[in-house]
Length: 284
Image (cartoon, rainbow, N blue to C red; front, top):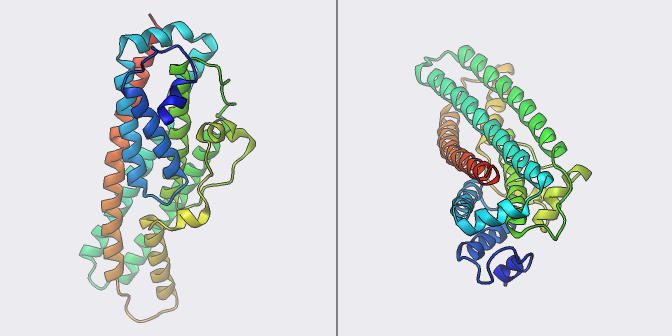
């Protein structure tokens, strides 16, 4: 049973664990499973939000606070605080990427609405959109490289139970954020590297394959493809461009961006709350 395995890691918590502990274990197992399955990005974000709400509830319990404060040494304290800071950083990167993508999408839609047969103006804006996307991809890929390089080695198996749980949550969150950033950039998740040992050990599951990633419709990629096709038509001096499909795909993309942006904003607030709780516990 998952909850039994979780509790067996240490006797630092009461002999009869609080009901939140098996719930957290269940959510961790589900998120690990989803990370290796073609579930949607929205489902993963929602699952992560639910997990952090449970973690925050657990951190409010006096017994959890006592366990964490007594069991963590200086090295573990630094690991927890540095890990929570990295999560905030990568969540902020995702939020910034969504904001830029939304502005670019709305700008292109505005051009389409007021376009009166002026294919040249639309082509110019489409190229500007794709240039902005290229710049965003570079920034996201750099963030992904930084994310991987900052992941240390996995913690020893005999660590305090609460500490182990928080580190496991951190590892799962990193993997799902990597999936989110890869989705925004329209790129595939890269194979594991030696620096990714923390996440790979915490996940205990197979990484997402390219085929599984491709099974989810990526609105960013679809808009990129449609715009490239229209620009190609213009360069070949084809007949008047039909932008009906572009409008449809841009509307879908804007709706998707809004949903994901809302999810990332909610998750950011929870990450901040979790970090504050950890700081308060460890400072007493």
